[in-house]
Image 1 (cartoon, rainbow, N blue to C red):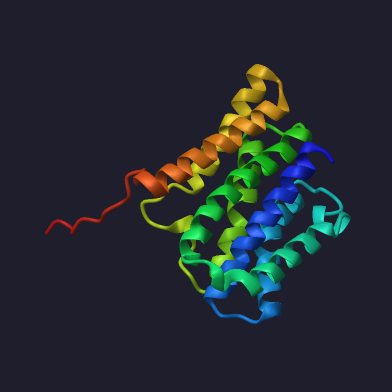
Image 2 (cartoon, rainbow, N blue to C red; image 1 turned 45 degrees about the horizontal axis):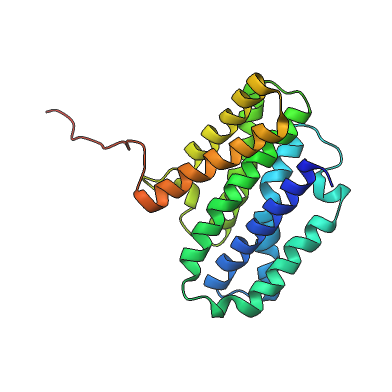
Length: 207
């Protein structure tokens, strides 16, 4: 198994679990669990592959990814009630999935010798779009857009780190490891310590 395949499998599994946890909070049936899990797990990678014109798309080339996502949904369907706080588990698992998925997206773009900006964008898209679609479908405020939290910023910083390390070290494994670490540290710091960027605050118009 290649490094990129391993990253894709890891991101699919973890994002599928977050999707199934969201489905449990929405009290969906088993098919709903599988749908949300697959949408979350495969959504970002699908958009990445479409934009990069990778043919076939990764889960069509290897349907095992679908089986992994559906299997995760099945397990969560029967075990979600055992968790003391599904929301807390969801948020922290999502932070881990973000880190892995950003590295996976950046890695695919690097393997295709894309420019730095495309590598960064593919990392961000792979990391953010699945969770965004998950939350929109179940009518929750997307974690991507939560006010005062680092999410897209963490994905951007992680993917940019991959580019920088690859330029100076030319070691893909090291670049993607640094990408995942930076992404997770920023996201976890935002959740645990409240790290955030300044947010826009409107002021009354002058009379």
